[in-house]
Length: 531
Image 1: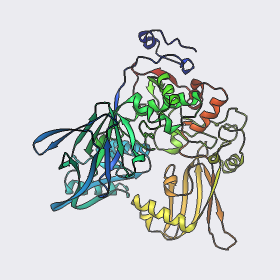
Image 2: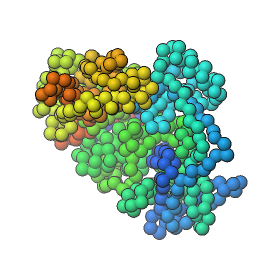
Image 3: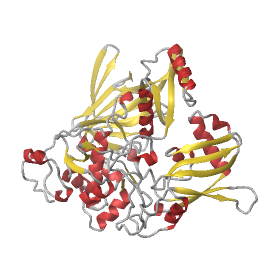
Image 4: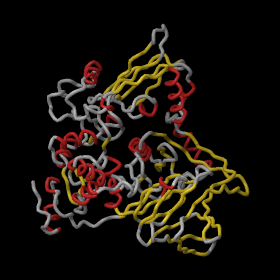
């Protein structure tokens, strides 16, 4: 339905539910919220790293930090270079943590953390590189407690848990030459008069990115530092939408993406509690590159949908989306462990329901699935390269990738030398691989759901089948991975949404298609953040 935007915000909040079909008038009066984004997550991992912070033309930076017992506040119109100095410790220090599991995605780590908590073990989610679940450090704070815990979980057949021990001889410190004096800085607050700061991680001036808001450099849980951007949500979206769906996307698709990006951010503010911020700036959250890419088109979509979020039964949805689905969206449980979301179910990603009937042609069946993959027309993504793909990989390369993956997982199968067979054992209704068995010289192990994308370099989704290749020899040479889509395939397809918009679909209809049963609401009307 059409909404007249000049009616008062009080009336809007009374009725609460809005359709994006009326998203052409002035923005709503919803109050903005500030969020914290880790834009450089692990500064100091490498001693050669440096960061340069710059004011914009005619502006100045204001720096606040502790210098011994003194609080320093320095103002400069010059760039500020932050460098890493490795400081030798007076004596070696042993740093330990109990790692209960290592995962590709936050969603899988979150489900694992829930299971540990249900068993009475206090845990925290970390991302030193891959996502991990740690036994809570402040609880298991002695070597004895850590080893007792490890012993108890090993008894319970959790063979992938381990104590990660590091002997530290030196630690990274951040230093900077300010007004002719070099300071060592553990915590630094950076602001500017114009509320704009350029950040450059390279030595090339053209690589600098412009960010609104304030910055903080602060220690993280891994012994290094994180540069955190404190920015208003609606301004944050200006640095997300152009990079997630592109500035040339049709208006309806751009508006749908904006509603999802806003919903996703608000629903996921708890991801980096362990490090003292809320979201990251890459594909583990949403791509956020600041204000360099802003355009009138993307700004218009943000202003038009201001305060709008997607909800299911008055709760923020799990606003997952991906580049391409390969012709069919996935359920949450097709990719991750945990409870399914009623609004995230397999849907044939096509403007017409005639291209494939999921109820009568279940993609859990291997023959049906391979036939589905052979169809290349009639879908929203049919004209795109990643809609269908075929990638060949030798046993040597597959073996190398699997060994690396299993070693990170602390799996006993990491010691295998030879692959004898690989087979998809179970698929979901959407065709996603739920279980893939790998037969080796030391036994057979299984890969489940999103593990498959981590374990192999070739496939870019779990929507594929395996084709053994001999290359004219008697021995198995390797496998072809034949499939479709890029990413997890859950929720909206960015490519698919653009096709639907070009066909004349409005934003609300696009969101209803990918998230059936959901509604658009104005933020701040008693909406719950969790599902």
